[in-house]
Amino acid sequence: MSRSVSAKFGDMPMVVPGAAAIDIGSTMHMAAVNSDADDRPVRAFGTFTGDLHDMARWFKACGVTRVAMESTGVYWIPAFEVLEEHGFQVILVNARYAKNVPGRKTDVNDAAWLQRLHSYGLLRGSFRPKAGVATLRAYPKFGPRPDK
Image (cartoon, rainbow, N blue to C red; front, side, top):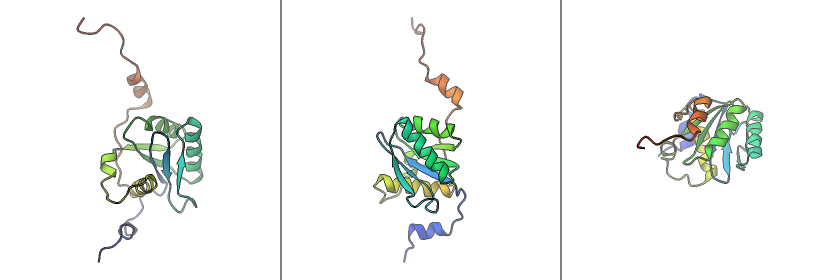
């Protein structure tokens, strides 16, 4: 008989008890915290700046210190910056590495799965330059084209 996924994880020590995760979307973000931290450990938040600050306040209330987020587009950038502003350690996770599990078909399940992986220290963040460098990289390049 095979054991369930949760039974297998039950044997592993939790490395990051203050871990949270977000499944980033274009119109909605699904955020998940440790199930011991809140009665509703997975919640939906909008994508406007006020919604992102609400999410950060909820994370603070739940004792979150680190946040992993998964995104395939550029929708993660505002959430990343707001969460860093609130003092969280934030990592961006490559969706290709986190979604290789069959049966997870909803945003709620994705967020809860990411949170679980993050709490066990099983996620690695993508490279993100420091804020000053990221700002400089965002400026368009002006001036004469090299071929002219």
